[in-house]
Each structure stands twice: as C-alpha cells, then as structure tokens.
Image 1 (cartoon, one colour):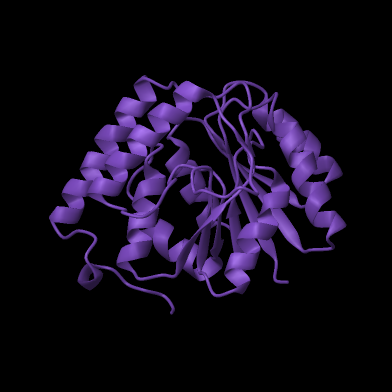
Image 2 (cartoon, rainbow, N blue to C red; image 1 turned 45 degrees about the vertical axis):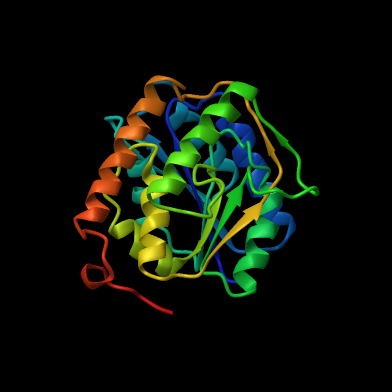
Length: 249
C-alpha cells in the first residue's frame, strides 16, 4: 500500500489528542504501513503543541503545523491536506470518536474504485454501532435534511470527521475550498460531486467522546449560515464544472 497521511485538526486538545495519536501510530505500525500524521494546531491556547511534540519524540511519523490564531476546522484541515505527502489522505478527529480500525472500511472502498470514501454514522448498516447523544443526533439529522434538500441529495452524513481521499483528489478539492468553519465538509463534498469524482459513503462504528469543542447551538447556527452561503454560490455558478478543474478520472 502507498503511504498514508493522517490529518488531525486540533484546537485545545491537550487531553484527548495523545490517546488518539498513540492509537493511530500503533494501528499503522502494526499493519506495517508507511504513514505520517499531520497535526494542525488551530490556534490552541493550552498545551496541545507540547503534547504533540512529546508524542513526536517517540513517534517520528508525527509532525506539527501550528499557527497562533484560531481559523476554524476547515482551514486547519485544508492546511494539513495541502501539506500532506501520502498517496492516500485520511482526515481524522482529535478525539478518536471514529476508531482508527474503521480505516479498513474506507480503504476497501478506495481499492474498489472510489476516489474519496466518507465515514457515515447515519447510513443504515446493522453491522455498525453508533453511540451518539440523542439531542446531537436529532440536530445532526435536521442539519442533514437541509443539506440534502439544498446541495447533496442521497448523502446521509456529511459531518463525520473520518474521510479518506486519494492525494490528487484531496488536494484538488481542498485547493478550491472557501469555507473555514465546520460546514467545510459540505463544500468539499459538493465540490467532489461537481468535479464528478467517485464518492462512496461507508457506514462505520462511532463513539461519542466527551469534551467536544462544538457548541451545539452557536456552531449549528454558523454552519447553517455557511451552508446557505454554499447554496447561494452554487446557484451563482461558482462551483460549475466550467469553472473548476478536475485532476484525474
């Protein structure tokens, strides 16, 4: 298998991040795969940078990108993706809510012809177990209904933070991404559909982890505004195929 880059955005994740980094390192090392972990500290004010450097001393596959001002999850991931060197690029969350073992499900989709495979907590699959807080599930489902009606019909879960791309596709899509906040997922998936990349949604196991930095009310409203902005841009033809370059088939 080609080298895998794992991009992890982090904002004040000194407590949750070390466990995730160890888990990812152990998983890919045990499989004997070539990999790098790109942690992007998105203006963290705690000891996130210190714990990443400490982990990197033990695991040289880890490298850190840090900047002083919080720019948003979308900006952090874009920064990490565009600096990645792996032929496969995995986006993962700092809290490890998507077990790293679920990589195999996404990678199988890539091996079967997908150019991007997105983890899903909502696509029906009796073999997968999702442990989520009920009120977050309700708000997430409501958000998804809006997204499906406006931009992405047929996709059950745009917001799961576990996505695998081929390198060329990831760098092409993210180089066109304009949303810095949490709704960046919607924009990159919409870009993928406009560029006619082969996308597969894959059910995965998922566990809610305490300590989320998402304010369910404030950030949900911001995400809605961002989605409306994407929809408006789409109607203006900003994402039309004539305005976008496609790297590969």
